[in-house]
Structure formats: structure tokens, C-alpha cells
Amino acid sequence: MTAAQIIASTGTTKTWKMQQLFGLGLSRREVATMMGVGYGFAQNVYAAWVAAGATRALATPTRTATVAALAPFTPGAFTRTFGVEIEAYGVTREALLAELRAQGLEAYGEGYNHTTRNYWKIVSDASVSGAHAFELVSPVLRGYEGLEDLARACRALNHCGAQVNASCGLHVHLGAQDLNIEAMRQLVRNYLVLESSIDRVMPSNRRGSANRYCRSLQRSRTMLEAERQILAATTTQELSVAANGNDRYHKVNLQSFTRQGTIEFRQHSGTTNFEKISFWVKFLANLVDYSKARLVTPNLPVAEFTTFNQRDIATYFTRRATALQTR
Image 1: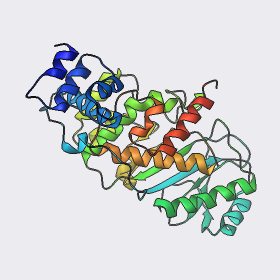
Image 2 (image 1 turned 180 degrees about the vertical axis):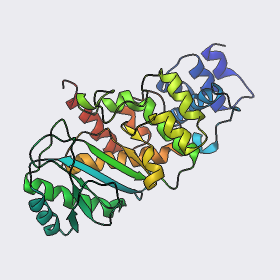
Image 3 (image 1 turned 180 degrees about the horizontal axis):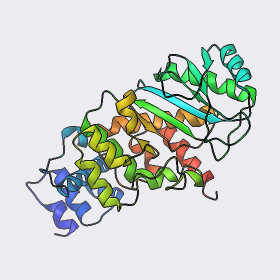
């Protein structure tokens, strides 16, 4: 059928017509214009159409798109628990502890460990190059109140003159105990197919598998093979293997779920800039919520991050992609 025949057909739904138009290779903007609907609705129908196709490619029963998958997505208030690990160097432990406490944060120095504390801790980090290298690890934080504590920590770091270089990373843990296995595998799959776009808002040493500590989820597989294995997982353990193989050093680390009930995102470069960290945390939280019922369009352009983000977050990353184009 031609586009004109599809649009003129009777006894069919608007959603069906839009999916047939996508099948002809038309873009979401073209379909939105032809059908007289908003771009957001066209995007959601397209995402559900892609999801149905991905499911049919698996050796599992075909499912139909849910009402939730077709409904417009509006990011909610930021209430999710999170934690950050900030790698840096150039300041003594004693000086940083004093400044963290001066900012009103409870903080202590410890040896290297993975134990979650109810206070900020400074631990050693052998992967960081530079004098007085360290990792500042937060307690469990929540929502906007947690972001206020993060801002205090960043002020302390910057007041003390903490520095970052290419050996430093920023790791974000998001609470994931509210996610079922379907939501978790859709989240991992969504990050996988967004990698090329997310790479554009990262410096070159955090793209692809350039960094041994945050390698691509695709690994040595084709994209289709990686996507199929991730979407076929039926347990968190199977999903962890499908995403990470045998180690945690990938952009999304599922091994932290068993230990801490979190999903760890390891791709962001080292920074002590509160704006960079807070926008990244909220971006990830929005992606988690979006993934509960939806599969994102593969290779979604940075300019279309409004699909699952507030306008200011999408604008921030669009400008960051432009600033990093030549780096």
C-alpha cells in the first residue's frame, strides 16, 4: 500500500495507520505531519512499533503494545534514591574532610571498600593518576534534598582545589528495587541503543570502549545480538551476564544490583561540577522511569532527548554535544 492508501483506509485505527507509514520508511516528523498529530505521539507510537518488532525477533511469545507504552511520557518529580562516586586528586584527605564538615556534611576517611555508609566517605583509588588521588563516595541520597547535599560536596571539593583528569570517572548508582525484570532489561536495552548518542555528550576517552573501566554494552557482539540477549533475559542474573559478561567495568553495571539493590552507571567523565553531575543524575533517573513501559528509538538524536526528559535537561545535553564536537 502507498502512504495515500494507508491514510485513506477505513476501519483501521490511527495508530495502525501510523505504524504502516513507519513500515514504509517515513520519519516520525513526516508521519506526525501526515496524520495531523503531535510529534510526541508519533514518537511513542514509533517506540511501541519498534518494541513489538524487537519482541517478535526473540524466541518468546509476541506481545502487543500496552496502553502505557503508547501514552505520552511526562517526566515526574525527581524522587529516586541515588549515590555518587567522584574520583579526583590534588587535595589531602584531611583538608577535604574538614571542608566537607564545614559544609554541614558528615564525612570520614576509610580504606578502599564497597560498603554503603550513612555518611560521606573518602577512600583510596588506585585507578586515579595524580598526587593525593581519592574517591569521594556519598551515602544513599534521595531526590532534590539529596541534590542539595551533592551541591555541598561539590562546593567542598572545589573550595579545596580538587582536580580531575582523564583517569577520573563519575559513577552514579540509582536505586532499582522498584523495578521488575522487564523494566530492568528494557533499561539496559535502552542504554545500549542510545550509546552512540550518549557518547556524543562525553569526552572521547569515555566513548565506545575507549576506557577499560566503562566499556560498551555491545562488547564484541553485533548490536542485534546484544539487544536480543538482553531482551531475552528472564532473571537479574541472566541480565547481568547478558549486559556485562563476567565483570562490572561497563557503562551500565548490573552486578551492583545483587550487592546493593542499585544499577550503576559508569560512563560519565570525572568532574566536581555540580551542574554536570546533577543533570546526569536526573537524565538517568528519567531514563529509568521511561524504561518501565517503553523502548526508546535506537540512535535517538541528542536533540530529541526531550522524548524522556524535561526541556532544560535536553537543552543542556544538546549544548554539551555541540561543545564536544571537536574534542
